[in-house]
Image (cartoon, rainbow, N blue to C red; front, top):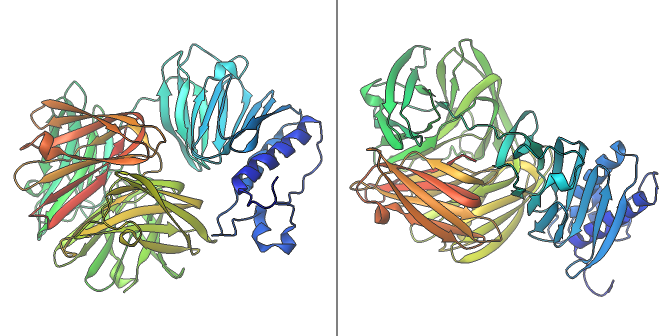
Length: 607
């Protein structure tokens, strides 16, 4: 190499992996000692723990490559065959083929059974132990096209293909399914592990939804449960409202096909704090909206309770009240441990007992006063957790928590124009620092990149207005450690606001039950395309009367789409279905009361 030029650690990772695989292909089975850039760790502090970028302490890609190669080396004894080719970007690319593996490194690869299109030069590792499953891992965001019948001997070609993302301690998450005879083409996220299996796709059956937050007490003059039925037959739905003392109120409704139904809870359970459970005989989608003073907040429901929940946002300073709401839908009591993380890394922990079929409200200001905090909730059995914040003499926002951490997050909404303040909130519950990179995806191109480090067991606050002033944008957050991410926006002089959790993966289909363009309401559907190729997006608006209207849009690569529904479908209440030809992320924002109030919510992914 030209030693006068700086070495790209991403390219170094590819070349060092090729050396490793070359030794394996020659039958070498001894141990390996890694030296990065030919410098021992003792003489260069940036080489410790497989090295970091000297510029901003980001981990080198070789660290992830070593982890995969070492795991493969421990379980496989037979060497494979290494092929090198001249890569115009990396100088050299490699292909390593074995009976149970295919590893590829370079800027692009197109061969028998695999097309590898990384967003930057990188590596993909495919392994299999039999004819029924392929494990996939990359160290860079990539678009993959896989035909396992051309890679794995004895693959069952009579079945459809399904790709799942593996999640530690949880069931695999279905990413995408493909018809019989079609290859699997999907976007793999850096650091995530996927599995490709020959089986019919799991049916999407969201027949249960839970909401921990809810009250019909003053000043909450309207609480709504919004139901979306995208099916072609009616849905029979039961709503169970759970009070703090464990008593319940039950009501049943029918939601007509391809329509939206809004249920005003104040008319059913007046002057009461409550949680809600939704049960349907066919798949439906549900959100909850609450209005108070001049503002309101909305959140999608939780389809499955969990034992652990994370909240990146939280503030108990002057004029702010933060609440953690916990719902126990079970017939037995459970205990929850709540840990609050300050920005300096210090923690405060409390324990609570939840009665059967009840809801519990925790006022965080009394436990951690005058602090910016993130929160982790851990329960003895699966529960539902939300957070609500109130501020500005009548403003507020709320969201569900996230039940798993991730090294990759997407946020679709974001605006730093006049009158708007946007904040990105990050929680690092790990005992070591997390190095994060934020990519702001602008409506007219980009991205703009910002990097920083989050302390151990701490919360970090990023003021987006200082990084991308006067812009509309979506956001992609990458971290070397699993973290939690949210976004909060304030407007109307800080009197109104809304927030949302991030999405850990894109989807080809999204559902947004809430929406209104009646007098005084403005609704925006926001779609982020984090891919390097244009996205074709179709939106179907389903009204309360069961009528539908469709629109088509083309999105530029790495961009955000903003659809002002009032211009497309004025004067109606509606739900929205978003379908794209590749993985995207969808949110919805609504504004009312002359812009003093607003709500936002991440869509519910379908497939």
